[in-house]
Length: 98
Figure 1 (cartoon, one colour):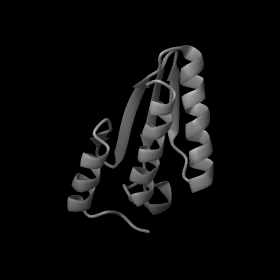
Figure 2 (cartoon, one colour):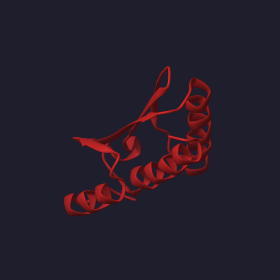
Figure 3 (cartoon, helix red, strand yellow):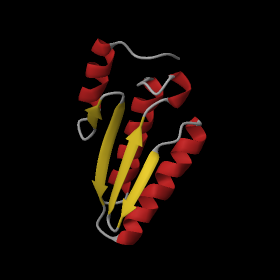
Figure 4 (cartoon, one colour):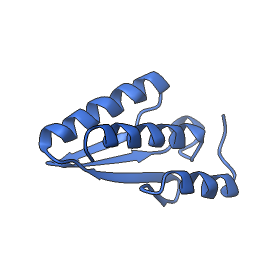
C-alpha cells in the first residue's frame, strides 16, 4: 500500500464528505448527542482501528470528538487505509446518534 495519487485522493474525499483534508491528513469532528455517546464513538472507532491496525489521532472535548488520519508507515501521507478507516468511523458515529 502506498501513497494515493492526487486524483484518487480527490475521488475518495467525495466518498467521505464529512472529512476535511489539510495537506497529508484528513480530519473530522463528530458532535455526539452526549458525552457518553462520544465515548462510545471513540470506543467503536478504537476497535475498528485495532482491527485495521491503523490508528487515528483522537481528541475528545466534551461531546466533540476529532479524528485525524494519515499513514505514518508511508511517510505521513494519505493511503487507502485512511479512507477505509474514515468510512468505518462514519458508520460508528451514525450508529451512536451523531
